[in-house]
Image 1: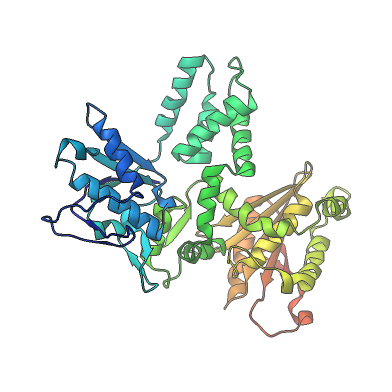
Image 2: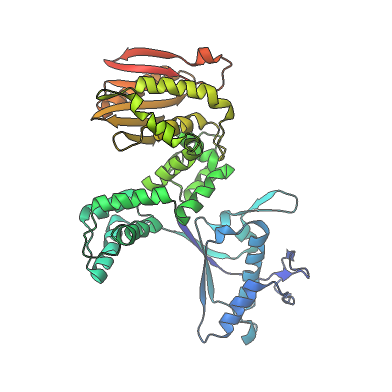
Length: 443
């Protein structure tokens, strides 16, 4: 989601040191300009030298925080308020701030170390703020058709559908998918049709490469307000806990990370979802020696089947030996067991012959993993120990197995808080549930 705020200013007053600014009455004259008024001077000089009115868009305003943000806004307000005083004081007729969230929601640190929200309102500079909507499927098709008209290179109808699937209309992703397909995959060979397979490869390339846009999105994962909303979703909660304020949920939605009804949110698009998962899992996956783990992958293949039982028993031992030294740099401590399990299986199983899918099953109270080898599915459901979790979880994984067409499944339950010994935590029990075989794996 992208917010555009049109800025208007009233009077303000700069102190002599240019760092402290106090609001002034409309009758006060603007003070002498200090040498550091770079934004003000640049916009003023540009406006004076033009014979037409100037409109300016400032992109990535959210990169500014605290004192730099205040200094920037004060210069904008000063210039706009005094733009008609004389020909020498001309200033842009209108200014727009473009950012992932409404600038009126920004918080700045005050002198006493506290945070004050509504920074734009504090300076009374916003006349209107609105969110730019994502592209619709028809708009994506129209945009891609412009490339076809210009170059003669066509997009297969299914390729446009895949672009919508992967991006859900997020403008940067829509353009990045097309650019990746045309320039990086097909090397600007306009004679080649852009197929759905090429579009899928473009999406995978973006996920793996993590361009600047995706990287800037991911930096938000470390923010406490974002983590408070995201972690329950990663844990598979049906909705954000009551203790998570609606303002925080709205904040994460405004950032474009999630979408949906408040209290029942999901990643904004499949690319973001995959990048979230990979980002949180990577610190753990990187700890596993790739050559060693991949060399061992064949040991889990028993004839034409994948020996998932032996593999998960190996994970139990790994968990026991490493839990004390594992920590997440993003602060997602509650979901750490799920991240480690996903990374462990991802490193060992994901290969040309074994497919490993993962899904934070939002709204279904589960985190699912799904391995597939030689046409046989191996569903795994991950849970954190809680009250009355077993009966509910058995029904859920049985339903998941039915969707996957599997008669055997594995329910892994992590016991993080009890004072049980490892021998008591690391359990294994096989049970029958409505005709299905379910292995209960305690960690």
